[in-house]
Image 1: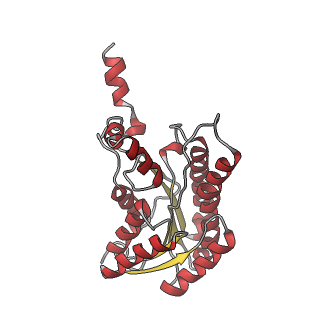
Image 2: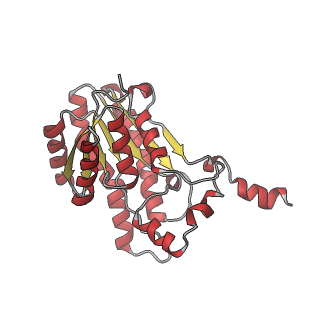
Image 3: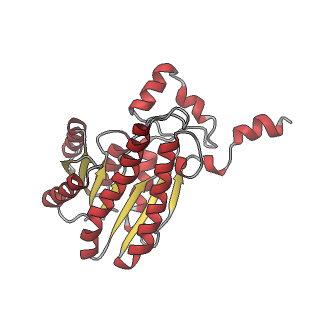
Length: 264
């Protein structure tokens, strides 16, 4: 029996990058997945790849900043695949900057997508899970929500996601609902921010890798495997946890130690 046999999952932002890897990993382990995306071509591409590989998937379109669209999307997902018992809140947005140069629109957009969008999806799925005796929620947070590494509005939003994770775990645990978060460090993806950085510096991921004790940035599948575990019955007694998947970066900056402390 595969780990996710019987799992009906909704994965937000699964049209590319981390989200697509999460959806693919869950399907490989037996789940059926609803790809909730604002970008219909990319979301449909993910579904096509899954179906062509023999899996079950459906595309549902929604802007997660719109609570009504989210509610409609969850109803469509359940109509297509069945009762949802796993939600993965992956959809995210970042507009790198600092507080000195940030406009109000940028601040509100990042909070709206990363924090409010996550809440909208949780709000939509909780009554469904409660009525059926439980389920699992995995939120994609970030090491930025645990330490400051730039991108202040994104960091503030992800810190909110972490606290929201704990709130849901505490309040709804007696309903059989577990809620955990995965906090990635840098991940090698094709999102627009990394694409622009690679155009400026093709070696950006290699430069970043030296700051991580494991010597590299993450691949999307590194995150997907952690999500699959936390969303499964293998983690049946784990709730309210924030799991860094960061190659050891939060444990210590070995480059700083090597270059400044040991040399001194």
